[in-house]
Image 1: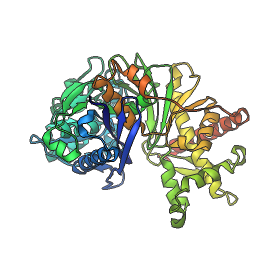
Image 2: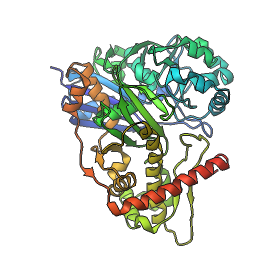
Image 3: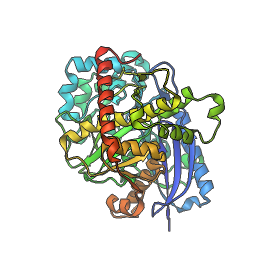
Image 4: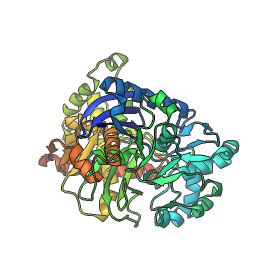
Amino acid sequence: MKKYLLSVDNGGTYIKAAIFDRYGKQLAMERQYNELLRPAPGLTEYDQKTLWEINCMCMRNVIRTADIDPSEIACIGIAGQGCGFYAVDREGNDIRHAISSSDSRANEIVEKWHRAGLCDQVYTTIYRDIASGHLNALLAWMKENETESYKKIYRLFSMKDFLIYRLTGAAIAGYGCQSASNLMDMKKKEISFELADIYGIPEMADKFGELYWDIQICGSVTEKAAEACGCLPGTLVSAGSHDVVATAIAMGITDSDLCFMITGTHGINGYISEKPVLNGSVKYNELFAFPGKYLLEEGYPSSSATLEWVISVLFSETDKKINEIYNIANQEVASVKPQDSSLVFLPFLRGHRDNPNAAGAWLGLRPEHTRAHMLRAVYEGVVFSHMLQMKHLLSGRERPAKIRLAGGATASNVWVQIFADAFDVPMEIVPNEEMGAKGAAIVAATAAGFYPDICTAVKKMTCVGKLVNPIAENVPIYAEKFERFHKAVHTMDTAGNGVQ
């Protein structure tokens, strides 16, 4: 009897492959750097050939490390970025590099659409705001700037759907990821020719494959792909998930009782609802992993991964060779009491929710400030960024009794405590596993028939860790700090394009 699940999670920094059993136990994990290309400021791309090869390498290696027979793999699940541009021509060849969801080349097009009222016009059809990393904007940019490449497009994908295409030969379109493309009519749950025409890209509406829910089987591994990835031909493949959805599932989020926060390259905040929120208070409504549910989401790239850049700036080359570098950062942050520093850090190295041109800064630096003060401001600034997002999410619902927290920040006790104190809400910590890979495995387990539905799979395959309660005396201190942070963000935005 087949008893294992192979999953792959394509994150902004790393690609991870893992082997899980039917109870959610991770047997092995392989991680390789995801080679993000930066051909010019604001441009972020992936070589699709390299992306596929790294995924195959991770799958081969994790099967070998787990020391299992590939014949025992019941299903493969894949998670990846929901937005961005991935495409092939009529022969199945890559047309150009993929464009990642964090790319900003289409900023001017989106700004033009906002000024013309186009974004407001389509909001009640797409249920979300439009950003430069979304597929509709990238296609409009390509039509204007790379006409020959644009004409070669035969199939359009999200990241995980492109990888499924390479695995199975099947061109599919995941409901969840395509609901983030701004080309889906969310009322009809189908790609819209009318929307494509409004964006000036009518010839793109028929470039998508058949729509699938995450928990459906969409194909099986081809002989060519099997040779590359180490699986057996015919191994089942599930339709997979947007990485945010996969992580939410691994956190045990399947209904509206809980809010969640993911701290990583992007800071993601969200909850699940049976109905979209269409009053403009929530940035993004997206279809969830199965029919009848929506993911309500706020997020931008200003979360715990910001610390990597900060460490590259504040620590010497000798320091960076120390394996305990993050422990040192945590110790220095803990050495400064929250009331003993008024430094403000804006973590918007790549813009924020309402200002893609915003940038990062330390504000209020004085000679008496040390690296420890600067690091504490970074930890706090990331938390405050999540708070700004959560304010929008919670404007239309009850404040949760607790928030489930996952991602890089959960490895730091001092950082988790700042989250709890600043939010004045207990933080329920999800074990620091590869959550995207685990969520993809849970989806694959459901698709393979291990469990009758995904809610049952979640109950059997997930767990949560400790609960971190707020420290009462710190709550008013952080409330005051957050107000200073909020004013600083507003001042920078209204003064121009943020700190440059």
